Length: 543
Image (cartoon, rainbow, N blue to C red; front, side):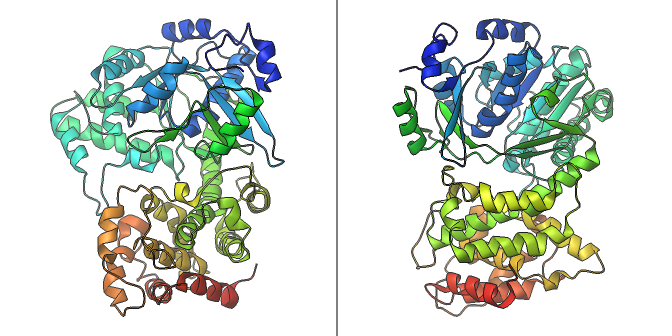
């Protein structure tokens, strides 16, 4: 048996026998180099980072393109750092689950330092400030999910945490954005060195959203006398601080018990699955799919590692945006979210099992090919038709990927506008298209409203996936029971007319009543969700 803390250079043969590739560099030397000249900080120490960003760094360290590793900062869950990073010297096992059922395993040691930097941990924040003042720092990447950027609530009002940060200044912010802004302030005050802030979170124009949030915080601090005008000038100068846009794509489910069992059988020891008090699911290993893309706008004012030599596509902002629109708003994420919604309602616990069902397969085909693909612009670097075909025929049906609709349903309220709102806006803006002609996007939105009831298709209560806005939205539908007549319009109007969700009032673009009718069908009794889904497919399905 081998384990993470083994000397992987001295025991290279034992790791080889267990089918595990090992780093081609000395971790201690890398840690020393990183301490002296940090290059890369990443916010968000979860499974996507461990199975994607850290692998990119490992490739560059293995080839000698990088000497410094990644410093990972976690702001949400201290147990991630204390239970998974520190006990294993920041190492972990990356498991690539291939569609033929085999695993490709690699011991990852590219993380030089891991820091918990929540508002309750001043030591971690002080250490990050020290790192941010180093002129060698070139890029800061993020995978903190949509909610990590949120400064406003469902109604467009500033959150309590954001109000507090604006009022109290940069001393000890509560929000992620406030923390990052305070670290940029430390860099500005120390040397005004350039830096790239790269959101790699899974939503459209992520760099713009990061920039807007940082500027909102900085302007508030200026108005309240915490910073000077020079700080805003620093943030606004693209030769000083850049906010490159990106598109990221790699399905990374929570660590799987089945994968853990196989690793043990292969001779790997560290396989304990961990669920923290905050419900983070993580392990000394991560499991992910083999298909992956990362496209980044090539704008790094302080230089950058040779990311392209590790498979990252570096290009211009327009191409990034086209690739992102293709994936996030059309060819993957809307399909994924639809499976999450209906999977939870219909009692599925596997994405692969869902796409093996003929009706659900037809749902995502008609949604993807029929309503999303026609408004997609070809980015030129990834073919949209081939992308969606690979997704539907190879990626989603991969039984080796232990992904669940319940995981994908996390934070759905913050995803709906991103997943479907862009296609709706394309239809609104194009005089040759009419959003009222859509059938499958309205069906999914109606399904989401049905999901907000937290009652499955058989009438049994279920626990919705974590979502910071769920409680507020659920109140609109509280008390709705299957088979009872209700005023559907009164229940759904606060949701469907909320421009903060979809950027449009869905009634004014001709979809409100259609969604209401679909929802009405779905609450008519047990089994009504299946019936409504099948009726729409029979009537309007072309694929």
